[in-house]
Image 1 (cartoon, rainbow over the protein chains, first blue to last red):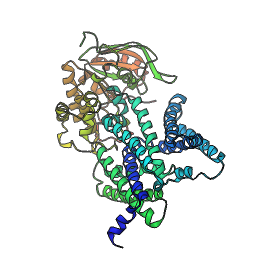
Image 2 (tube, each protein chain N blue to C red):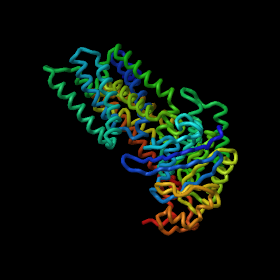
Image 3 (tube, helix red, strand yellow):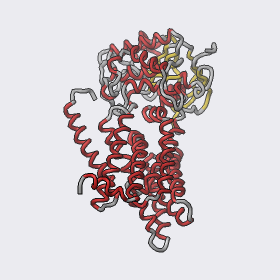
Image 4 (cartoon, chains in turn blue, green):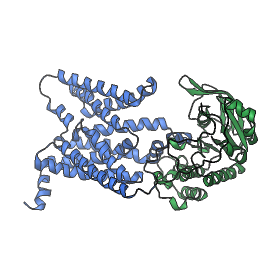
Length: 281
Length: 263
């Protein structure tokens, strides 16, 4: 088998083509939104929101509604609910996250276990099944992902300012509370876009790991985003091929490649920092 | 600008949750004032700035900023937080930070234009940071960090500067430079309000002073900062130490200057 066959062989299959398009799309959206998640310390939120999508999926399945619709509703509602509970209840943010996260996932599991018989579709959402993605799914993912990217694009300066210096941004007239809520909604939609490709349990890695790699290597925000996108794209493509040739779950393979790239970047950056110790911190 | 004061607080009380940090404050600040706000730790200095900036809704009283509500005149206000509240590891350069001063003016969905780039360049020049435009902010010294944040405020071309501890943890040269810039802004009719722990700077460098300790003790010419009985009243009778000896650059983030004796 020559190099062409290795690369092009799998692409003879429609499911591999769709899988590639879907993982690239998911990778880019996750990298962009994840850059804000990492800088604002919202990783735990990403995890919570992805688990909160599960009851929405199950309810939509039981009612025969579009699964993405159900997932979006519960994911976004939970994201906003976390913000509301922590603000009104005077609780720490991570406490509010912990309470809602576990509660919503338990609700999903309870509903799921009440369905009689084996529900392969829903299992696919827990662990990810990018090779099961249909053309209709891709159209939906592209629309949702495109909307997320367009919103970030339009509000990029405002989101960055509010992330860096909330008070100064607010004093200058930016609606920082609205921007916070918008970011939570964007995280919710990003999670929904990603769960079929990588699964509820691993979505947080797609959000956090590429952006964290960017944070290790970049001194400017948009460099961080570019690095995150690059990591995501490389991991999506190579993970998909690894999953094909090694016959492992695609979501897991993609996340493992991202983790490996992060580990290399961590080593490289600690070494660089060790050499540059004269610089004031 | 309408003829009235730049800031008018009437019977303002404010705080967090059930904690009252400021009680019954009446304060007028005229346009072009260069006002230092002094008082012991926990006296409500930062709270006062936040109320004026519109960041904190007061429990009661009325707040009129530049003739309106802070929210409506926000583009004319520049607020600079305490250095220790800034995430210095955030991946932004000096230029990025200063450009943030233009964000509200540029407007949603647009990038900076020529006017914005020029304002940023001028502001960076004014604070003497031309050579450090592309440096990540965490790699700046304490004095350079304060200069960068003042440049952000300058770039927004405000009518009201609200600066929380702009002189803390910086070298004497930077303190002098920053105060010269702020004095220049106030001469142009812009209003400057800065909190400070550094009593020794107040009489020489500011024109007005407000002494607060949850309540307004006194407000008037900067020389009031030398009045022993007012200081005793403001600092709860604790001994005030005038100490010029320990200005230093690059203070560790958790180190603060207290020029009054703490309990």
